[in-house]
Image (cartoon, one colour):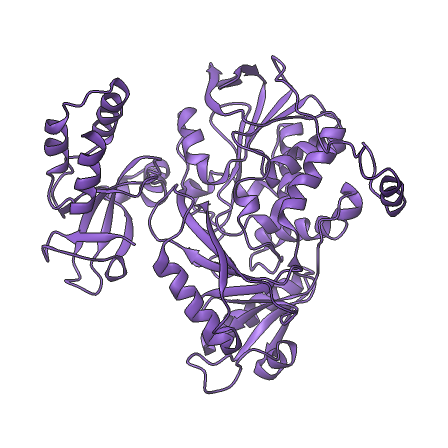
Length: 136
Length: 416
C-alpha cells in the first residue's frame, strides 16, 4: 500500500484516496490542426514505459481533488518525490544512475546525494529513511 | 520424441518410471539461426513450434531470460474464450479457439482444455444492451453465444446470488459454451516439447541485452551468453516489450501494469463454469485441483514489480463475495502478480517495425493466454513469409497513427 504525500494537503494519505493518471509532463501540441498523423498519434497514444524512474500524474480523488505529480521507481515502487502541477521533477534517471554507480563503487559518502536528491518536495519519510539506510 | 500414451504409461510403470525421456534438450547457443524468438512464454514457444511444423523452418532459437513459461503464462487465470466484439479480434481469438479444440492431440500433451463455458454477467440495462450487441456480432462471425436472463444464469450457477436483493443484481449474461479453461503450464511445456522435437533450440537463462542493427536491418542479438546472429527476430516478451523495443530505438504505445490473481484453499467441486463480471469486477473459476481461481483488475499505475497492491485484492474479493456469499469464509492460499502490457485500444500489436526483420508480438494486456495457439500460428506465418498474416494484419502498430483502432475495451475481460 502506498503512503502518498499530497503536496497540496501537505499530509501523507493512503493509496486508496488517490488515482494514478498516467505519464506526467505531456504537452498538448499547440496547433493540433497542423499536426502530422505521426505527431498526433504520438501525442495521443505513445507513452514512456520505463523500467525505472517514472514521472506520473496522480489525482487526490477523495481528498483535495487536485492533480499533482509523483516521481516513482517502477520496479521497487519507491516514491522518490511528489510535487505540484507546473513544477519540474528534481529526481530523474540520471539521479538513479548516479546512485547505482555510488552503490557499485561502495562509496559511503553520499549524504549529499541523499539530501540533494531526496529532499525534493514531500518525499515520503519511509522512502527517505530507506534510501538513507541503504546508503549509510 | 517419446510419445505419451496409456500403453506407454503401463510400460514405464513396469520399469519403475526410471527411463522417461527429458521433455526438451538444454542446448548451447549456436552462432546463428534463421529465426530468433525472444521470450519463452506460451506465445513465443507456440510461434517456434508453428515455424518448424508448418513452415519447415527448424533452425530456430527461443531465448528466455528465466525459465520456460515462467512469466505471464504461469500467472494468469487460464480462461479461454473468443467472444470479442469486432471482426478483427473475433477472427484472431476464434482462430485460437479452433486450435485449442485439437491442441492436446496435436501436441501429444494433455493441456487439460475444458470447455466448461464462460458467463459474462450484466448488472445494468446498458450492460445487457452491450451483451446483446456483442452476442449478435459473435453469431454473425460464426462464434457461439447466447444471451441469458437472470433465471438462465441461476440455473447454470445455483450457488450465485442472482436475487434482486444483491447490491448489483444480476440481470443476465452472455454465455459462450465452447469457452473454458486450460492448464497454463501444460500449454507452455507442450509447445516446448513439440518444438524441441522438431529441432528448435530452447535457450533458457539467455537474456537479450541489445540488438545488432545495421542500415535499418536486424542482424542478430547480444545476449549474456554472447552474440547470436539472425536475419529475422520476433519479440514476444509481454510486460517487458517496451524495454526491448527501447534497445532497438523503437517506441511502443504500451504501458506495463501489474495484474494479479489469487487462489483459495482446495474445495470440493462447487463451480463448474467460469463467471466473469466487468461491472463489479471479479472473475472466478474452480480448478481441477479444487481451488477457486480469482482474477483481479490491474493496478492503475505503471509497474514492473510482479506483485499487486492490497486495495485491488480487497476490491476483487468484495465483488466475489457479493456474487457468491457462499464463499465469504473461504481462505485464500496464494496471490501473485504478472506484468501485462496494455494497449490504448485493448488489442494486441502483431507488427513489423521500422527495423527490417524485427517483429513484435505484444500488447496482449490482460487477456493473452486465450490467444496463445492463434497468436503463435499467425505470428509464425508472418515471420516465415515476411508479410503479416491476414488475421494479424489489422493489428499493425500503424493503427495508432492511421486511427484504425480496434476498440475492445468492452469485451476484454479486465478493465484497462
